[in-house]
Image (cartoon, rainbow, N blue to C red; front, side, top):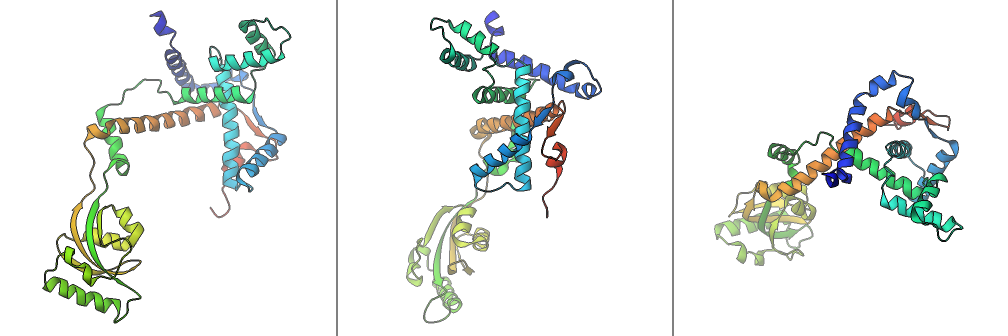
Length: 335
């Protein structure tokens, strides 16, 4: 029992539940001027920090940010600070071995006592506030992010929810339609008659003599991709021949010659050997993948809701002559 209670996963679940309950009290907290709200100092992006953010963007992307990109950069900087502060309020740095190891290493480099023990070095590093560095901030933000992603109610995913998710994201799981077809090709630059005339004459010959695809290549001009396409999906056909050609081929009944059908190359007489329609695989073969995807979707929603509630706990200021709310709300020109 004691081993179970010491588990980090249990700690995260308990903290997550407390956060969830606490978030429900946000409206009341806004109406109060005392208590925990007073612990949260305003998040302030100084003019220097704003300039730094702009410079970082230009260095990374090689151009100035658009209004939309700038709003996203400002929001990210604010959210990073909020996540870090909330992680510190919840003492998520305690018992974190990676943070402890980093502080001990930093303090050992500064300490004049080569015999100092690990615990003494750790406490001294905390006292000197060496834990406020970029690496530790990143670790704490990620721990807070993971915490916000948790479902405080611990609701299990059942089969009906998995099936609903698969149906909502059918294209992600369905096996695409496929077609195998042969064709006789006539290029736009053909000599000795127009392509349409040659194609119609060849179609009459193919039908009247019941010529099968295996014997039809002598009527075709050379084609780089060959004269039979096996098991191609709609996107593969469209990518090679064009959207309208793909739609026409997938609409054809099998075992007969049809055409001429235009493509980006010229004209084609087409024989469909077989087609398979789009279908979902059996649930047992895709269940695990769907569960993971559903969990990721829920985690993202939990995080977005949690972060939105945390933002409401802070006064946020941008010291560049523009308020935080207007910086995020101003639409781009022409949008």
